[in-house]
Image 1: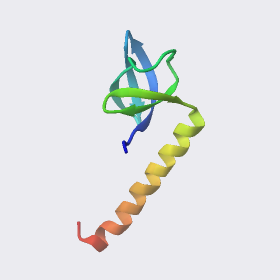
Image 2: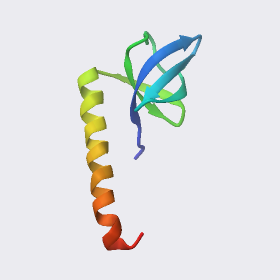
Image 3: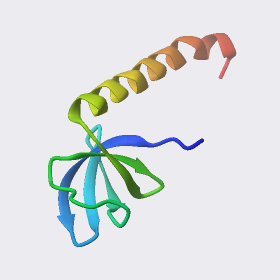
Amino acid sequence: MCLSIPAQVISINGDTAKVSVGGTEYDASLQLLDDVNIGDYILLHTGFAIQKISEEEAIETLKVFEEFDELNEQIKPELDI
């Protein structure tokens, strides 16, 4: 199983895109996808755009990640981490 994160394409230069995840920018290879445009949402895994997704899917997934983060913060004191 692999974990990928939703990212929005903010610029494209050849086969490389600059993508944004929560305001942090990353480079993403576009070699595995066709027809990616600025503003599209992709799933980012180990530096590769592996799938295009809808804005709704991206937002929902990011909300779930935020919920996990909040839960993690709640249980940290109990785990003494």
